[in-house]
Amino acid sequence: MNMEQLPEVLVVFIYAMITAVATGLGAIPFFFKKDLSRRLLGWAGAFAAGIMGAASFNLIYEGLEYGMPRTVTGILVGLTFIYLSQVRLNSGEEIAVGELSGADAKKALLIVGVMTLHSFAEGVGVGVSFGGGREFGAFISLAIAVHNIPEGLAIALVLIPKGIKPWKAALWAIFSSLPQPLVAVPAFLFVQVFEPFLPIGLGLAAGAMIWMVISELIPDAIKDAPKEQVAAIATFAVAAMTAFQVAVG
View 1: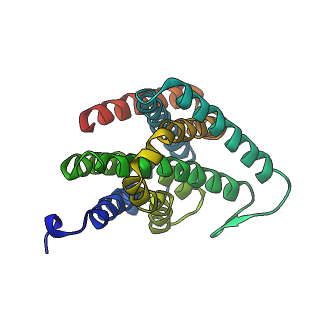
View 2: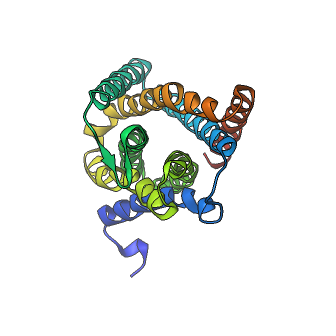
View 3: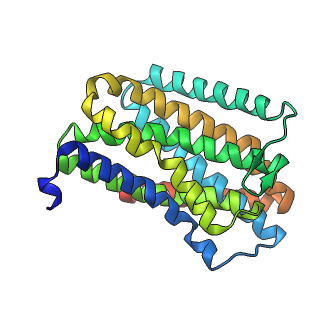
């Protein structure tokens, strides 16, 4: 049985699952380079910040196509959510994520949580796109899958220097994208219900990611590498990610 013979709901789920699995591919470079010097850690953090920054503004631009007020509302909701999450994580309770604990575990939880929020919006986008036909939905899904690879790299760049093994970082990256297949099917079945919330979801994810870049990734990178190098690498990553998004979009 080929894809054309499968029920439409199953096709939506399969394509959305492909977008989730693609996120794990971002960890592949770390299977070949495992030991990072302190300066390389700073460079890695700067590159992750640039990737996430460019992705954030791409989400905002997508949201603006559906409506500015809802997109801005989403950004403010994302800011509020991530701020309250940070306050909660700093409340004094000891947490652990795999072999990580303390501050490293909190940062790992934040990055995975922020990217999971991002995935909800992308899942809605996949489901809504299939409302325009199977070919259009497949195109959007594959474009999102390609976008997800550098976002998986951003997750790996944060987790692996803190002690997470590359294969576990790949699994965490895939885990952060699991909302995509879970949300894509209901979004496809109930397009008219989900579509008005898409710009809010895009803005929410963007707001949370921008906060993460400014509050966590850049300050951490500056601790490990000269700020001029961090700024240069982050700016280069923004330019590269923007060019990449335009090329595959």
